[in-house]
Amino acid sequence: MRLHWLMLWSAGAMAQTSLPLAPGARVVNISPPASRGNEPCIAVDPNHPRNVVAVYQSATVAYSTDGAQTFTTAELPPVAGWRGGGDVSVTFDDRGHAYLSTLHFDKLGTASYWAHNAGRNGIFVRRSLDGGKTWEKDAATVKAFQGTEARIQWEDMPRIFADNHPKSPHAGNVYVGWIEWQLEQSVMLFARSTDGGMTFSAPMRISTHAGLPRDDNGGLVGFVGVIAADGTIYAIWNDLNNITFTMSKDGGKSFAPSRAIMDVAPVYFGGAGSIPGVSRVMGFAQIGVDAKGNLYLCWSDYRNGDVDVFAASSRDRGKTWSKAVRVNSDAIHDGKDQFFQWMAVDPVTGAVYVQFYDRRDDPANRKTGFTLARSTDGAKTFTNYAWTEKPFEGQQLFLGDYTWLTAYDGKVYGAWTEAAPVVEGAGASTGTTPRAPTVVRVGVADFKNVK
Image (cartoon, rainbow, N blue to C red; front, side, top):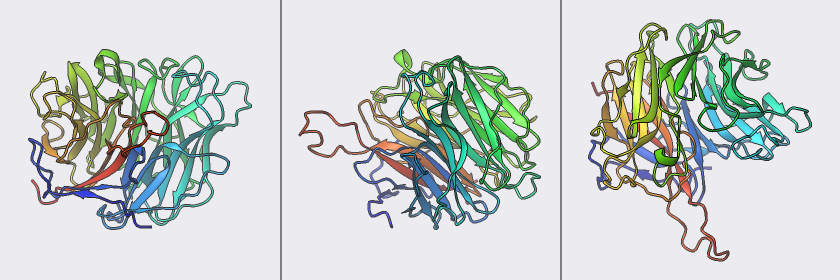
């Protein structure tokens, strides 16, 4: 059904930001009022760019057939025998089929040490053959534990992506990468499908160096993969104070030994490095590739005291990397945080886009806006634009662990979470303060006529 709660902010709203508004900026809410949606993902069909799918947890799909101007909630059949579903991600293949990856579990293990006392958990993929409108009933199992195994591991943070390049020898392949928490260590696993997401290969380890077994600084975190026009897979994740890189030239059958390519600050921002008002923040990296095969990295860390967003590039397919470039354009060391970045490279124009939460306009570093940055010179410099005009604020707000961004032929589509107004009187009957509601938003910007 059509989202009756859909709301938008347009250029006519009262400006409360020092940045120029992104061209053609439009923002809509895709989650219902008083909900706690978060951790969204968004994808555009390269064959039919007006088809856009956005997802968020708990396992909700919203699709658009008008270039993200309006969205409709899809009916998503449950994974048989499992409840809910989180850590969602979505992608399109070369035929316009959409794929949704979700994590399911009955209970968490020991706090932050998920493999200890772990119960039933698994990663599943569902498919839509009509651009996200309807979804097949059956789900493909990527990896799952039934709870009776002698050594149950914990699968976490799956990311799905597909080869939709028409000239790639591996066009149509679907890939999933994720963290596996073991009792002794954390590793990155990878599986591929060559039959349109119906079945997946046995998971293989792609992390040469193992991380610590806790979901904290020192554990491996944040798998992100991207595919070049020739079908080469590039993948990264964070390993303590570095970004780690690997690649596959044979459609995911094998990977090069992973290696550290960029020194960064710790990926979790907690303790002295925390973001005021947000329960937790991570700055793990993303990777992108343009049509020429140039690679780009983006991440955030607090090397400058407050949290900033950074980018780097490689002109030799990941052998060497440029120095870090600061993406946010406010004054350095100003005590204002920019965080939860996500990057996308436009496969048609080659422009590099980065979105992030932005507190530059609040002297108290509390009120949070949302910014879109653009580079047309290979990530050497960035121009910052406001994507929203009205900031939000929360107390111990849970925004999830990531936002998401995609771009195609000058159009940019972002998905993120904001605080929503607290319902008056909520929790009064129990004398408790309810967890703050959040809203998932999708933003569109149009740079087709911008140099």
